[in-house]
Length: 258
Ligand code: C2E
Ligand code: MG
Ligand code: MG
Image 1 (cartoon, rainbow, N blue to C red):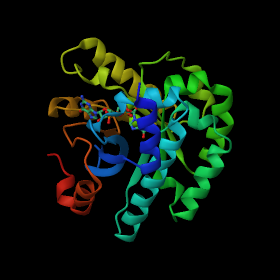
Image 2 (image 1 turned 30 degrees about the horizontal axis):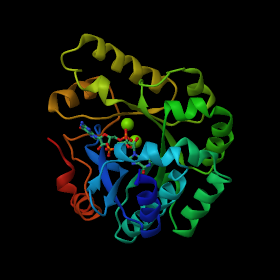
Image 3 (image 1 turned 180 degrees about the vertical axis):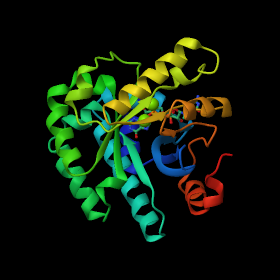
């Protein structure tokens, strides 16, 4: 009931925290990127997960204001890494409503330029349903972003409607396989087949593949055998603070799992 009022206040006060979860290139064993994941620093209830407020913020038309803060904060973070000589990409999750904003792509490109960030260091993550339900708006927007050098990833792949038509029509560079297929991959023969098929399909469409939610070494070994490109998950690290991830990125010896 108060959520709307609390969210609006938090937008004004910027009561957010941006955590970062590393992505490991499993061919080189190097952390090549991080995903930015928002938390709400709620004045009474403490740190809240995005599952507790993103959907509500979308319904109330508040997600764009929050998304702007995420993009700005991610840009300040990369800018700071560049000055420290750290080479790392950031990916940011984007809601459908943000894509529908007037000149979203133009504003994003100008924000990157203003912070001196090469577009290749910035990626956007969109879910299948976001892309599918907003195809006509998404297409020109993503084309503009892609031609400026910003890469687009499909998030939670395999959990939405999975109409594969958009894969060939939208400029998508990265496919993120959802955790539900990874969870039981070591025991479930169907998951093994699905994941191998997804990796092969993505590669033949010239896309890079990231497996989400990798928690165990055995899962990593299988994904290596299947020629997956990158992994993300608790095996490597939970989402951590700016300070923690910066330490991780500046000590190459910490980048190795095995
Ligand atoms: P996502 O983009 O698919 O992010 C992955 C989620 O899985 C994150 O949850 C992450 O903490 C969690 N995760 C990562 N590795 C593991 C693992 O090994 N095991 C398990 N069990 N979970 C793992 P989180 O941070 O709670 O974020 C949830 C969702 O909220 C995200 O899913 C994304 O869709 C959305 N979200 C997060 N930040 C933003 C944002 O800034 N804007 C928008 N629009 N949505 C966001
Ligand atoms: Mg994501
Ligand atoms: Mg995901």
